[in-house]
Image (spheres, helix red, strand yellow):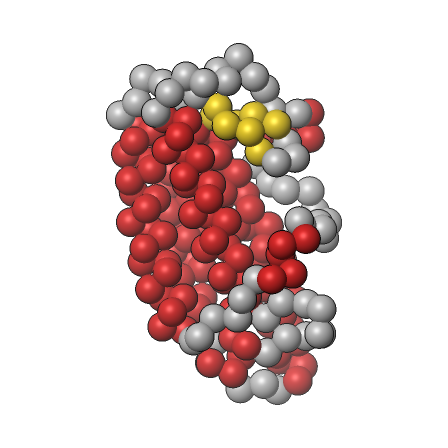
Length: 176
């Protein structure tokens, strides 16, 4: 069962990121603190791409009862209880190395608009469903629709620390 508070937190987090986008110039969005690190624009692209995937999982869970008896692993259960990722730099899957740079702020704005529309569809599907299906996370086992939504929100917040480090780099370097 999804709580209204979770839905509000999810939308609040998305809105905060969308508003923060306004503070970046095109140059700042593309500047990377190091060759093997992401720019702010790449963080945004990662957030959008992954959140789209998580919302797709919400829709799948809301459409059937598959895997209803399965559980998330202990690490995931603790994350859900804490409503946060562990406070550490986490190494993502290898494909994260291919996260693209955006063409510009307009592209990110368009993707965010589509993401919010998709979120509305996924949340409506979840709220209107009597299904309790679960889908498998690649490393944390099985999540239901509400857990996928919570995971999406936690994932976005987790990257706030990364964005703060990038902001510090931009300020220290005087990148406008």
